Length: 138
Image 1 (cartoon, one colour):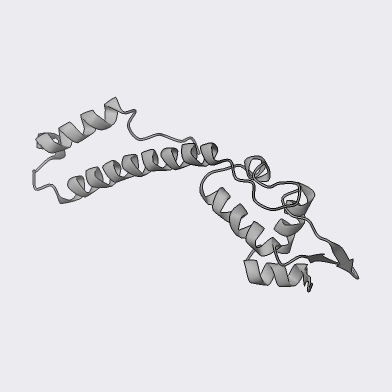
Image 2: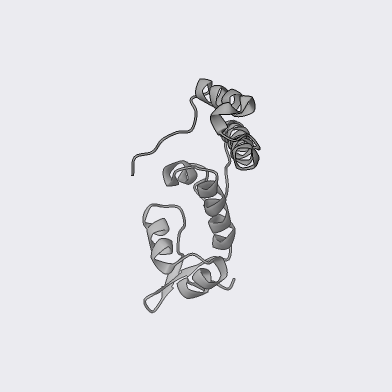
């Protein structure tokens, strides 16, 4: 079996070597040996990195992602957790779609003032009942 050194893994995956070292430190991936000072990884690490990236994009923490790999480093995906995350993403999509529709209406509304527009008032009231846009401190 041909192993990939950390530079090859970084190049093929787009993950920085520092992130690869961190992922190894926290147990998400494992090197199998060293060639000089360079870590050597099995080719399967590329699949693991794709799953890690997908998990991060879905909003899972690295700890949650680590729990999705078995002792052998292969995926052991918790189906119910994935269903719950998919439901959460679907809810976010609906909220973002409603926000997008509101913004488009505000941008295109022919009323002289948005406060005179009954559709705008209705959209604002609906958004307010759902909790409206979340304000984040910066």
